Image (tube, rainbow, N blue to C red; front, side, top):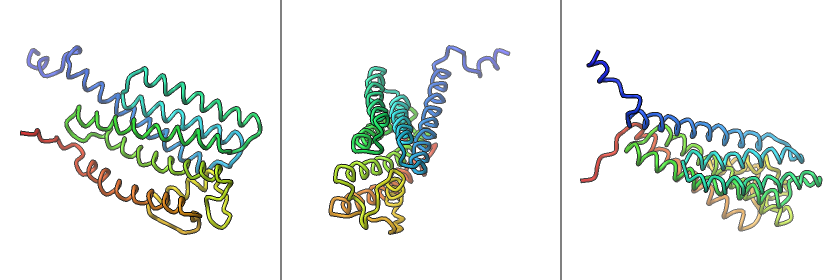
Length: 238
């Protein structure tokens, strides 16, 4: 019994606390991936109606808070981000109550929400790798979240530019609806390039090419590197 008791970790042992903390962080990144995928799906399917866009803003606001929570940042930072997210959500609700559908203010608010989430994910992934001294499942979940967030960020950016520019971001008078922006963004990020929707003007061309480059470089370097080294312990430097 003594030997068996010695094998099992004590309920108060540091090893048990570390295991619990790592499992908790993995669950947080799993929740973040689910929220990010939900935001992608809803915005890609939802019609450009008043309250549909409020739902999109709410999902993006929740994704930002989850990203900071998964990164285990200071509670004060999470509270400040939650206040900012609440203010931006209130702007979206106010615009919806006024009957305004998918205008520049809502697009800019959504762009800001998505812009703030990726840095938190990067911090969380780096902390996970350093703490465990190896590539973990939560790190892989984090880089997948980051990939989707990049696509959502460019989608919001395209829509914001379209609204500010008077509705001329896409060529051939194609309306930059939220679903079309998501569709164009992810086909560009994945370098599929169907060609049914194209950008108009030098700014749109440059942004689309930049997104394609980011998507390709990200997949062949960051994602492939982490997935290829999943579970491998990093060698200590001499």
